[in-house]
Length: 328
Ligand code: PBG
Image (cartoon, rainbow, N blue to C red; front, side):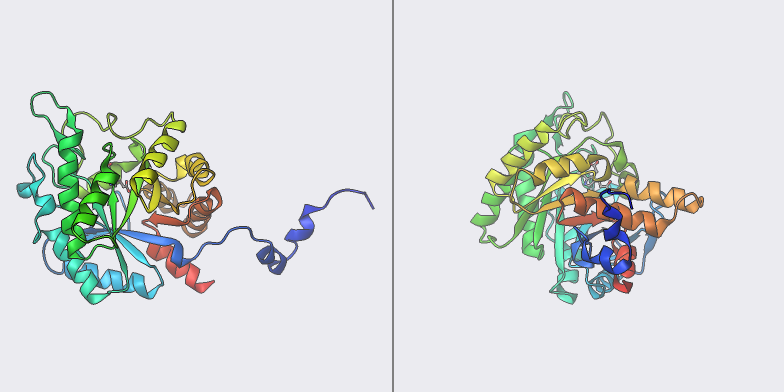
């Protein structure tokens, strides 16, 4: 017998493999992003995101019930706003009776124990398609003026029943500004999940198709981060934490596992990974061609976020993965 070290001993059977597993994935780790649209009984498939549709509020509530029954604890909502309602000030964003606010109320009415996370950024409502206000004279993104709108949005969402507001806009100072605004309105129990390290990424393409929210001019590089950087992510995370964030998110997910790992090693806050639309679309496209196996790749990919150190994952695979994980 050779005198060698034998790590394979711990891989011999499913039982020993289960016993030595270092990380775990369950339905409780998943957050399902959902798209809401005006109307009744409407389900509009999104071409670049097979299996995902824009849903009218009635069908959205039904979908939430299904997710909740699978053990998924949280949904994250995004609105597809009629172009006629978009303007340069994104004023529809804080309309208390707007589509988004009605959707939050209906979900919380039907399923009070399902967590509703809401998105705080101007792009779905802005005729410019940017996350912040745009100076019409020169196209500059107006950081401090945007904060006022983000705060108004957060309050209206929280009053409609949002449990977690998620600023995805990347303006400086927004977490502290939103925290103060919520606290002043006696909304201290509403949590903030900040998109702390959000990169200017081409992986958001299908999401912008889904909402018709692509920027009309320019790109988002003056506020979203450069993919060459990781120390900068630490700085953003540190700022959001010190301003009062409850959970930090890294976005996109798959190409940024190193960023998740770096934040994991440097914060005690819970971490979320956003497995974004382009990551979903890649898997779907390759699986449709028969080049990879959808289910195995999906689960392996979701597990990589856990291994890198995220506690939770926002993923368009939530329902599919939920079903599969329930069987195991
Ligand atoms: C915008 C926002 C984006 C996503 C979530 N919020 C796109 C963008 O920044 O242009 C992308 C999510 C995805 O691709 O799944 N505030």
